Structure formats: structure tokens, C-alpha cells
Image (cartoon, rainbow, N blue to C red; front, side):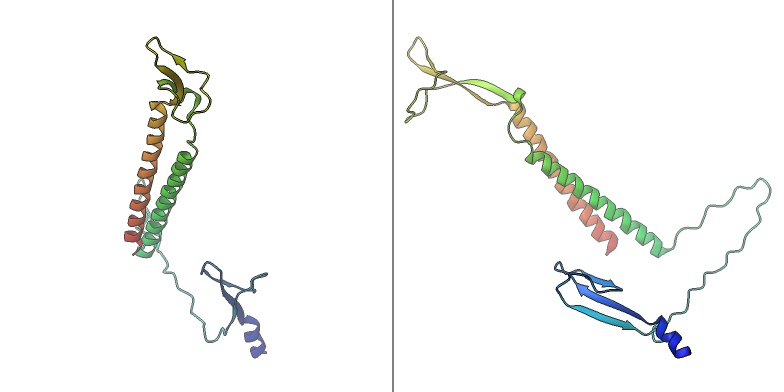
Length: 184
């Protein structure tokens, strides 16, 4: 009877590595996976661990009118986990800001309707077969052809977007360095 009880508690796990190199464990083999899956049988007698005993905290009676004491500082492992989580969240936020800045720059595209200006240029370039209809001759015989070009506001807007990308890239680098220092 005892042997059957131990067999009932035995566990079987499966281990596989995906195409990105990430190792996975599960209690069933993955469906549709074409790579190598390793079966791992666990013997509960060979891998038993005694449960951790949590120390009992004694209640200290408060005197009437006394304020309760602040809880004790978390242990070192908890502090490290909290620091790692905070640094990882900072890094993810920095990466998200960088993605948004890059997307904004990519979508800058053509100038907006209010970012165009009309300039008076010279005659059509050499080899132009059809004279432009908006060209006209001045009294001194010069040909002037007005044209539409992006204004300084357009270039200023694009420069601001490029600066945002640079600042976001620096912020990601800083967050990565802080993450490595805080985790190493």
C-alpha cells in the first residue's frame, strides 16, 4: 500500500527549448512542438524537502494611547526582488518611450498644410522640355518660377522629433546600466 502511495505522488515533467533558446518546463509535452522534448521523472523520496518553519511572532500588548510600531524592514532577498522589479519596470517604460518617439519620427512624413512656403526660384533647370505654367518673365528678361518647399517650422518639428529619439535612446541606455548594476 505504501509503495502505491509513493508512486501516486511521483511526478513527471517535460523540458523543451523553443526556437528563441528559451527553456520551458511543463507537466505535459507541448502540442505542435517539433523540437526535442525531454521527459523528467521526479522521485518524491529522493527530492523531499522539509517545509520551512516560520518563526512565531509574539504579540506585544500596546499601552493605552500608544501608536502601533511600523513593520520591520523586509529581508535582503525581498529588497533585491523589489529593486529588480522597480529597475525592470523603469527599463520597460524607457523602451516604450523610445518606441513611441521612433514611431512619431517615422510618421512625421510630409509637411503639414501650414508647414509649406512659396519661394521664387530661377528658371526651370536645363533639359526641361515643358515650361512650367507658373513661371513668368520679369521686366529685365529673367524667368521666375515660384515653387512650394517645406518651411522652417517643418524642419524644426522634425528636429524636435529626432531630439526626442536621441533623449529616449540615452534614457534606455541609462536604465539598462542601472538594471545591470542593480541586478549584478
